[in-house]
Image 1 (spheres, protein in one colour):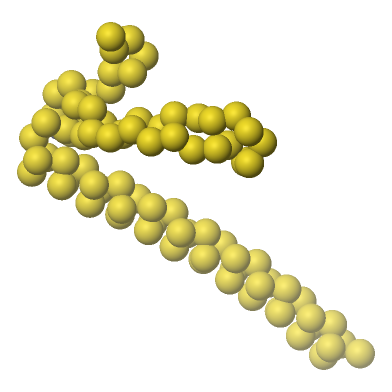
Image 2 (tube, helix red, strand yellow):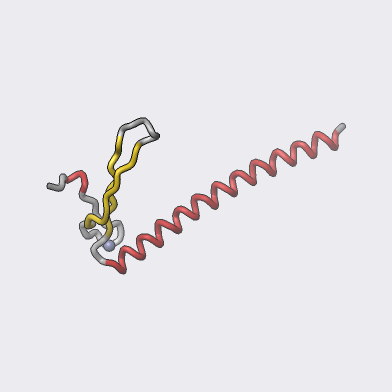
Length: 87
Ligand SMILES: [Zn+2]
């Protein structure tokens, strides 16, 4: 029996996603086991597009994170350079 909670819809075509796989994992090694379920779009081609989109979003997130880090580093370096120059 599948509860309504487990039902997800494809973000692209809106089809009800079908169960793909399920695996169990120990959560933080604390002994409580959590069950992961993965569902996919019944349309294989659509799922490929969705996968690519998610991969793109992940990359984008990583890239902006990297940019933020290097921007902070640059500011720090500039400040240090100014301090070094004023004395
Ligand atoms: Zn779809």
